[in-house]
Image 1 (cartoon, helix red, strand yellow):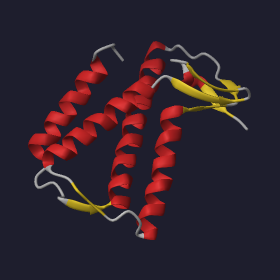
Image 2 (cartoon, one colour):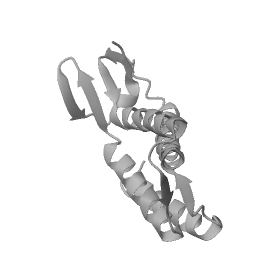
Image 3 (cartoon, one colour):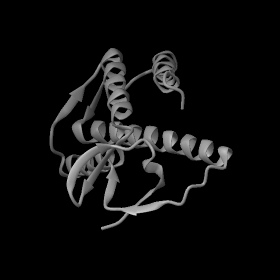
Amino acid sequence: MGKFLEPGLIGLALFSAGIMANPWPESLSTGQTVLIFSVIFLAHTLLRDLVLLYQQKKRKNSTAPKVAQVFCMESGVGMILVAFGIILFLGNIGGVLNLTKTGWLLSLAVLMLINYGLKDLVFGWNPWRIYRDPNHLNIIPRL
């Protein structure tokens, strides 16, 4: 994607959500809120990966995937958040969160910008490290 295309699309998605989504839930359990945000986080990741995969196939740049002991940071963070949300929701832990429409939009903006910031980061466990790899779509994780 272009350097400014994804941040522009994030802004457009937030603007559209602000105009179209009415009414916003005013209070949800903490578990529900974490689950909603984690699913949005993973959907954002999936959408970006599908666009990159489409662009890669369009260019017919089919480099052979390599196998490494790494995992995409944004996918890892998203899965941890889903698990955390499920624990909170099923355990009825955390109480209730009250968010206004502005609170929802600010939270979504922060969430999507964090996702954008993590897009090229990869976590490796042999050796333990976090590094930037813009082409990690071609890596097959292994234990």
